[in-house]
Length: 280
Ligand code: FE
Ligand code: FE
Ligand code: ZN
Image (cartoon, rainbow, N blue to C red; front, side, top):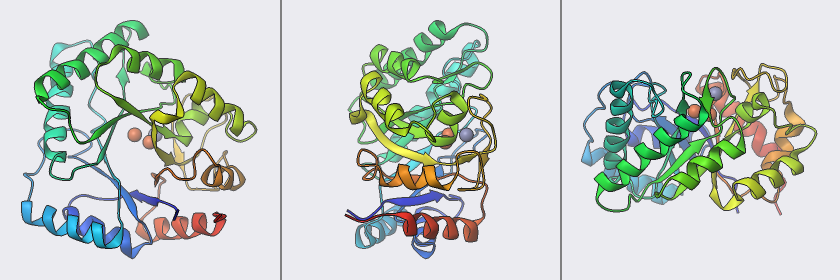
């Protein structure tokens, strides 16, 4: 199978523009924000643009596309206003994503802001359950929990916390594994990649793993900080990325770069990673 690789793209020009940009830099998948990453209203869906994109994506074998929720979405917030915002944004995002069936939707589980992890997990699963009830049908989109670095009171800093959210939620959930976040979170993917993958499998199950964010890290192992670096320029290093993209249990997953790059930089990283790929 051909490697599925791409990067985060600006959604300001619409879907077709993202598809064309992806193709121009050698990508066959991409991620985008559903709206301004700090929150706010999303632009109305342009049905012509969506139709043209879907035709283009089918012709060029582009996908799955990964929509990223705004950073301000905090389902575990202490204030009802914050939690209601998370609920209405996610519900609206999932309704909009029905126009591009089969998409992935990634969100940061949330920060418990001092209420404790257990309370945070209860609030997150409570919101997800309310989303399923309100949505009416089963969304065609797969909702993914992103593994987090554990900065501040972030939930999702361990595989066990992700598992606990899955267990408390009725909606079928997948996981997006972020290499920078788990490295900063204390999973040694440089020296012990196999052990980390096995631990993921035993705690969460690899069947839930639907996407990988490929990011190097500016921080030392287990720093719980979360600052992305260009591939091969950080503490994770190129050898680890070569092992990750070729690993038999990961190699068929879609890989999305979120490194501090412009388009030219992403094009180069995609070419670099493709050069490290060992086709079977
Ligand atoms: Fe993220
Ligand atoms: Fe990420
Ligand atoms: Zn990050």
